[in-house]
Amino acid sequence: MDNFSINWCLGDKDIEVLDCSTGLLVDGSPTVSGPGFSSRLCKRALYQYFLTAAKLGGHDYLLKLPTYHSVKVEAVAYQTAKDQVKQHFLRTNAGPWTSKKLVDCFRA
Image (cartoon, rainbow, N blue to C red; front, top):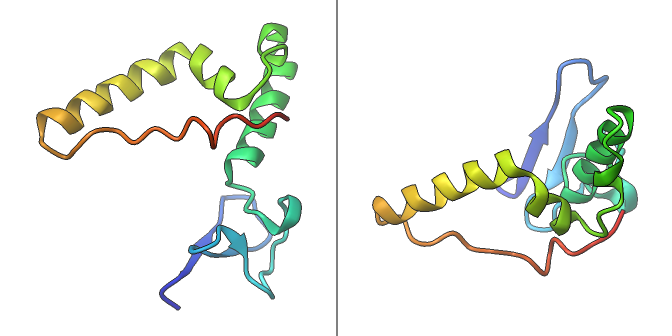
């Protein structure tokens, strides 16, 4: 049971059970919502939710950006908060922020 994670949000019918070592849903998880048994909380799913919200909000320029990474770069509030966290890590000797740009280069 050490490698399992459970997530649930208000309004969900049921929980989602993940294998933390793979990021995929476990067999028998009551909720199966993401593509290829990925979590509804994975980056690709969150990106899809973001694009839906951007479309509903009339933010067409965000829909034209080619990748998840490019959308993150354009998010000023996100980048400002991330910079503050990175600086705090360095000030408190917690080590540098680890960047995963290659992981973020997928498209919708």
